[in-house]
Image (cartoon, rainbow, N blue to C red; front, side, top):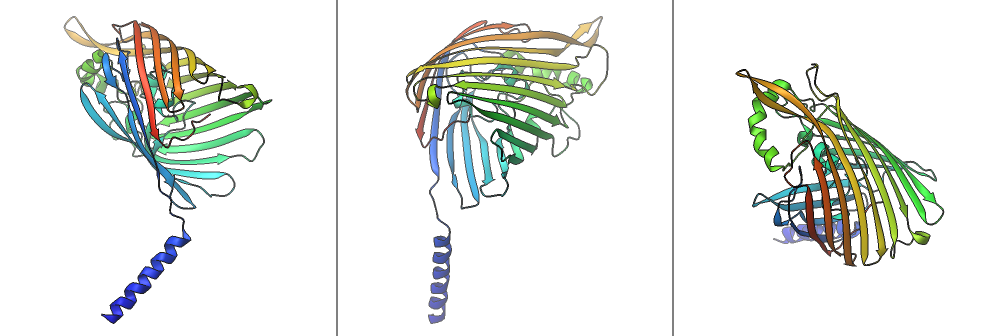
Length: 388
C-alpha cells in the first residue's frame, strides 16, 4: 500500500509538472442563429418558400497548445421538413512553423476564390451567388490537408495547395473514383492605397480527378434527378468537371481605415468549369461559366445597403423520347439574378436583412422570378473577426 501511495504521488507530481509546462485555455464557444421568411424559391437555393431556418452554427475553437490551434463547427439545418446535422469544420492548424508556412488538416472550407472560405452567416446577401450554388454546392468544405505560405514582403502575397477527398464535387455515379479526388492551388495578393483604400486579387485552379460525367451513366440516373431538379434543391455541386478556374477581386474603402462607421466593399468573381464529360461527342458543351459583381455600403453603424448581379451560363442534359427511342438532349441556358438588400445592425452580433431578388431563369425554369426575403442573423458568445 505504501509503495502504491508513493507511486501515485510521483504520477500526480509528474502530471502537475506537465500541465504547468503547457498553459491550458478554455475553448471559445459561439452559436449563430439564422431564421427567415421567403415568398418563393431560387434554383439550387437552400431556403424554401415560407418560414424556415438557415444554417444554425455551434462552434468551439481555441489554441490547443503553443504549436496547434483547433476548431469544430457543427451546422444544424432544415430541408424539406427534415432536420440535418452536419460537421462543417473539424481541423487543427499549426501556429509556429518557420518561414511563413502553416499546415491545416481535417475538415475545413477550401480557400477557393473570395467567398468560399467564409461562413455563410458572414455573407451580405441571403444566398450565395448562383455560380457558387451550381459549381461548389454553395460552399465547398471537405476532408483534406492544406499547406500555406505567406511571403515576407510589404505587399500581401500568399500561396497555398490543398488536397481533398472530393466526394461532394464528384460526378454522378463516377466509377472507381480516386481516394484523393480534388487538388487545389491558389494565390492571393493584396495591399493598401493610402489609409482609406485596400485591395485583394486572387487566382484559383482546382483539379477534380473524379469530376468528368458520363453520358451513359447520366441516362441511367436521369429519372433519379428529376425530383431534385423540380424542387430546385441541392446539397452538392450540380455541375462537375475536371478543371475549375477562379478569378476574384475585392476593393474596400473606409475613411482613414476605420470600418466602424461607414465603408464600401466591391467584390467580383469569375468561375469557369471545363472538361465536363468523359465522352468527346459533337454537341456537348466545352465548358460552363458564371460570375457576379457585388457592392455593399455601410451607411452608418446601424444600416447597410447592397446590390449584386450574377449570371450562370450552363447546359442541362435531358432524356427525350423520339420515334420510340430515348435520346439525350443538351439544352443550354442562363440564370440571371439581381439582388438588392437593406440590413439593420443593432450591434456586431445582430442583423435583420430585407432582400428583393429579380430572377431570369432559362435553365431550371424556376416558377418564381421575384422573391422577397426577410432574414435574421444573431450570434451568441465569442465571435471572431471576419476575413478581408
